[in-house]
Image (cartoon, rainbow, N blue to C red; front, side, top):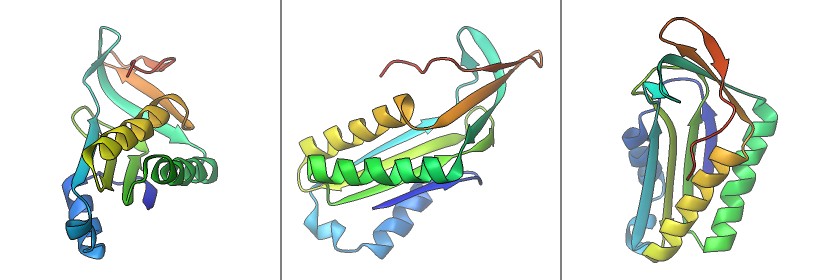
Length: 146
């Protein structure tokens, strides 16, 4: 399990390659890998968005990511979890989150990945402030439904 908050731009495919290089046994042990990559949209709630600032409490958020990664491994029998979540200033089109899971079978991988992503969207302690095209700022009150 490798769950981390990052501040630099996210390159999900590089992260996956590095993880697989460090965990060669996954290639022969697992029959399924499910990957979700979330990117920032240029619009939200019908308005153009110029940027978004993602805030968090580092220790609390890191502990939450580790907890849900362990929970997903236990609940769905996952062989491995790779989780990256970006914070700070993010521009439209940039990657925000990577959830990659490995399992013996596809059902566990799909369900484990969805469990993690839904928790990140609904429970994880992140706060989003958008800067709209006209320069106005607003806090995002609700997440998009899963």
